[in-house]
Image 1 (cartoon, rainbow, N blue to C red):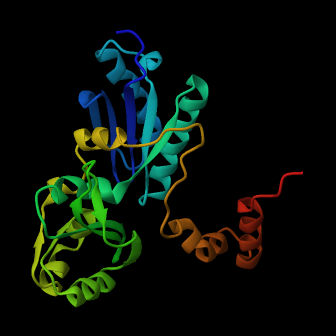
Image 2: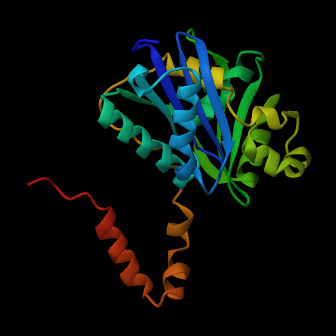
Length: 258
């Protein structure tokens, strides 16, 4: 197959499941899904190259790259964003970012007029969430609130105060199902198969994006675990926590250009 700028490569590693999707004009060419929460860096490129080879494709056939930018796993998001940027810089691919929570909501919003709450797991008792209702002319879910990080108790209180029929889905629902069943009224809790976007959905969303040369900015709603536990981590290594915070600030501060 000759090079075709309509072929899009999509990466998603916002949660434990790594997704690689390749397609063009609504046609899925191949997809791979790997459960590799600690080995994403080792398996991403080999899995991509294997998929391309089986379809008699190469990186020269790719026209653009879309990657899920969050919210989600700090390490997982950095993995796909860094990999996508490296490929884009080496091959001249334009890039675009996909917001994860709308991607999860998209198919359900197309089939119900109820409020759809996407809830993803962040850590024990902590979640990312966003509400949607209906779809726009291009099929994307219409957001009712901004993506938010909070506790399961926060979310239960918000939904109960709205007093409307709701649908809940996502890994945050699966991890805390008993809590939501007991604490949220008038809600339908969807199962595991709704906790990850379908490859076709990611490909459909990628067709609506604007692509460019700039790196995709990650969407983080909460600090990474290492940052939240900085005092404990550095104390175990014999480093003063105040000194460690100063070092971290220096390392993560963008200096003005000369």
